[in-house]
Image: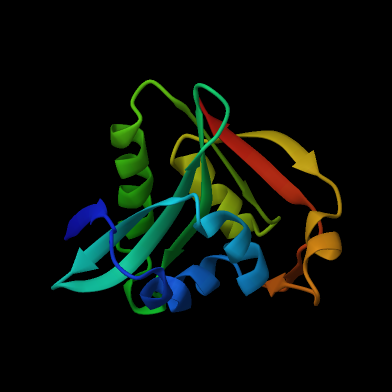
Length: 145
């Protein structure tokens, strides 16, 4: 597997990006100032991570998605490790929904819960988002110093 910064047409990544964030409008809010890191397996892009530089000393993972055929192969974890290698002296933060398996994944990768943004999903998305039977309401922010 190869992990590298992506310099191609962002629209080619949109199907994967929409797996990580269901709203094209929300993706449009950050994609223009994101650094995109992709995971390729046999030259096929199977994962993507969109990262923005935030205030000094911080980067934010805005989107992390792995193609369903390649989940549970360590690709998401490898993409997060790539972020750590690209910004070694930087804190990393990310926001996600209340899906138990997603929170467990990030905690296993060394992230800890920082704070919650109440009603983020209900106020910013035009329709309810349901993952693993959980209707997402609040954004849970996690950090990795």
